[in-house]
Length: 473
Ligand SMILES: *[C@@H]1O[C@H](CO)[C@@H](O)[C@H](O)[C@H]1NC(C)=O
Ligand SMILES: *[C@@H]1O[C@H](CO)[C@@H](O)[C@H](O)[C@H]1NC(C)=O
Ligand SMILES: *[C@@H]1O[C@H](CO)[C@@H](O)[C@H](O)[C@H]1NC(C)=O
Ligand SMILES: *[C@@H]1O[C@H](CO)[C@@H](O)[C@H](O)[C@H]1NC(C)=O
Ligand SMILES: *[C@@H]1O[C@H](CO)[C@@H](O)[C@H](O)[C@H]1NC(C)=O
Ligand SMILES: *[C@@H]1O[C@H](CO)[C@@H](O)[C@H](O)[C@H]1NC(C)=O
Ligand SMILES: *[C@@H]1O[C@H](CO)[C@@H](O)[C@H](O)[C@H]1NC(C)=O
Ligand SMILES: *[C@@H]1O[C@H](CO)[C@@H](O)[C@H](O)[C@H]1NC(C)=O
Ligand SMILES: *[C@@H]1O[C@H](CO)[C@@H](O)[C@H](O)[C@H]1NC(C)=O
Ligand SMILES: *[C@@H]1O[C@H](CO)[C@@H](O)[C@H](O)[C@H]1NC(C)=O
Ligand SMILES: *[C@@H]1O[C@H](CO)[C@@H](O)[C@H](O)[C@H]1NC(C)=O
Ligand SMILES: *[C@@H]1O[C@H](CO)[C@@H](O)[C@H](O)[C@H]1NC(C)=O
Image (cartoon, rainbow, N blue to C red; front, side):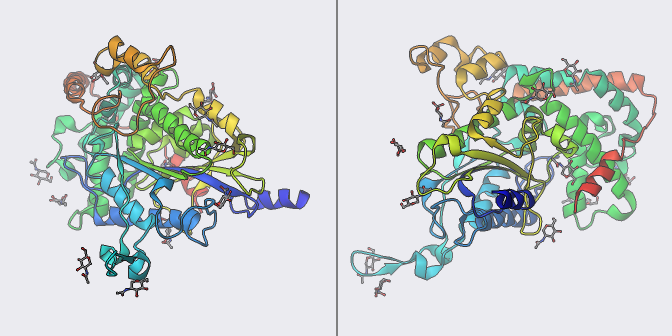
């Protein structure tokens, strides 16, 4: 017992006594083109990143010699009933899901994929035994990688109002004026995309995004002389702040609606593993960085590490492992199940693996199923009634007639589906009105700020850089 405890302390992840029974993975997409001026797509680099990430998780959970093999998961030939994969319909996220799955279950070769027909002819799958895995279309986040304003994709009235309130907060106003000169100074690098009146903290993310993408992908971009690493770091830090505040505010939980619905889907994914006695083993979803940030805020991960205030890099993953410490011959009882949260910032590989962090401001990197579901239950929103009341929406899918017809005898109504087909859930796309409102607000703020402009540019604290660098090995 003592000896085992010692081993666990040294090797918290890979101990043979543990059996992993199910896993939920939430992934950001790989490298893509810039959001401005629009029509984003996954780049070759991004495809590589997300493929490598899929390969990493194959070696962790699926391959015959996987370090934390999920009990009884099919090694090489995919068994579709064991997997559930979804992504929003988007030119970046949907292809990322495909690329990830190519790494997770790569082509098996002509021998393994060969199937004999009735007449004796053998047929192999194309592309050397390539395996096709269906990807359900997630309802929320459609076209999110083309939208600068992520909250618009939430379609949730109160969340949109709450995020808009950020643009009149003191915190925002202060940064808007203190960074005005800094942003205007970027004009020579970005004047093809942003006019001078768009160059402000208001567009912190899209400006950072444009230059970050240029710095990674543009061969002819004169990064050496103009875009110094200091400037890029400054842009990133300001964008981190801007986006975190749009995604989460501790006194207005509805702002984090993306994280709240994600939390419900995470619990639902692992719950399916339990109620099916382990038949469904792996749930994988793809989404925008805003969903990560909302969840980080709600789950108090910022308390575990202040890096969680930052935007996760491309191909970042959040992982929830459902496992047991007792030795099992069949699916264990719920009392013996534990959940571990892990995160990796950017593409995972065998030398840069996900790290476990405590959820909910606790000290523990693993929780009993009961503690996990009770922690998530404090902020998750998983059914239509709760969503409509949190969002303050009363029309469309939230009109009383539709809500009452979908609930059975006082039970708390339908579950928000991960799969769309248009109607039936509150998370469908379309936010043109919202974007219009934002543009109007931007113009008003822009005029006000021009009047207030004092040109004082204060560099944002670099403390985070120091602590980030120190914590990376
Ligand atoms: C066997 O059936 C397949 C599919 O119908 C056909 O393509 C193939 O030519 C057949 N082989 C022979 C030897 O008849
Ligand atoms: C088809 O595959 C089976 C099993 O691998 C093998 O026994 C058989 O000889 C093959 N048939 C042909 C026509 O190659
Ligand atoms: C968070 O919400 C509170 C209460 O509405 C508000 O006073 C504060 O300005 C908000 N902070 C941000 C950064 O939006
Ligand atoms: C953009 O900036 C460059 C470098 O200062 C300058 O040569 C160019 O004329 C500017 N273009 C516009 C449209 O202002
Ligand atoms: C790359 O940077 C150059 C110089 O700023 C610019 O003219 C060009 O449009 C950029 N290419 C892309 C694909 O963004
Ligand atoms: C799984 O979810 C169902 C429906 O929400 C719930 O009734 C059940 O108690 C959950 N099971 C576990 C083990 O949490
Ligand atoms: C899971 O196992 C329990 C206990 O063995 C059994 O009662 C239940 O019917 C099983 N559920 C499924 C979906 O197989
Ligand atoms: C991810 O890394 C970036 C730097 O590459 C950092 O700014 C950010 O805070 C990190 N995010 C998380 C969630 O760890
Ligand atoms: C794995 O599969 C075997 C054979 O079907 C079964 O007896 C066993 O209970 C399964 N293990 C778990 C943990 O589900
Ligand atoms: C793994 O990722 C780290 C960090 O991105 C990188 O430095 C390293 O070269 C990668 N290793 C492999 C084997 O790709
Ligand atoms: C997060 O921390 C705050 C304050 O530290 C606390 O009030 C809140 O309950 C915590 N949230 C969760 C989900 O544990
Ligand atoms: C909720 O209300 C907002 C604002 O009125 C609207 O834009 C959005 O489409 C509504 N969402 C749903 C699901 O009806």
